[in-house]
Length: 280
Image 1 (cartoon, rainbow, N blue to C red):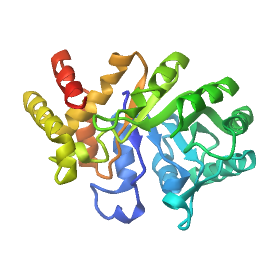
Image 2 (image 1 turned 90 degrees about the vertical axis):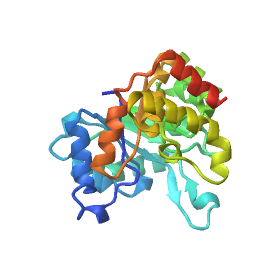
Image 3 (image 1 turned 180 degrees about the vertical axis):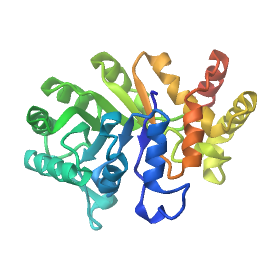
């Protein structure tokens, strides 16, 4: 199945609810054929993810990220660390928390304004040689960053926000990824939940037309607007000729199954055109 699982919001404090037990949610995803499980040290749940996949490691393409360091006094609440020493330290710490010998896909979580990306990717390539990482990814970067990084070591995956309400990746990053053969991992494919329901307030002004089209297409397929929006991201693979892996996140088994059903939803060329036009 070409749909991953975004683990960002998983927390142990929901374990008392069978539908929201985080280990059960991940296990249900694996049972359904989901292979990629995506986390990060900044999500502060790597140990939880490690427990959830324990005994099923061979079924999982395990992805994690480094580079964001939470600091209340920093702009945006975090700083970026991407120097070579930190890369090594962060990876070893993630391996311990995840309780695995290697991370399948290891991302730089955010571009650094201070450390050249060549230094960061060079250190990440060192992790590959050490057997601690199997492939390298980037997130929150520019097209120029991707090219410079790829010149140092092949970049297997580019993780960026991509949805009907956030299509900035299509401008420069996507053509570069297509050229380099880099898989695009689409996080927040439902626009951080905006596309699951009728928006209100300022969001309604931006998405009113799109909401109507989503509702019409959803009615045709006896689906939800959120499922149609997620299916649209799946169809980007055909539209752009690049491997696309959406990673919707959820904290419930019920919602997980709704997301998985969206992967099987086939939209017509007319429906795709209407959705594209509604976001233009």
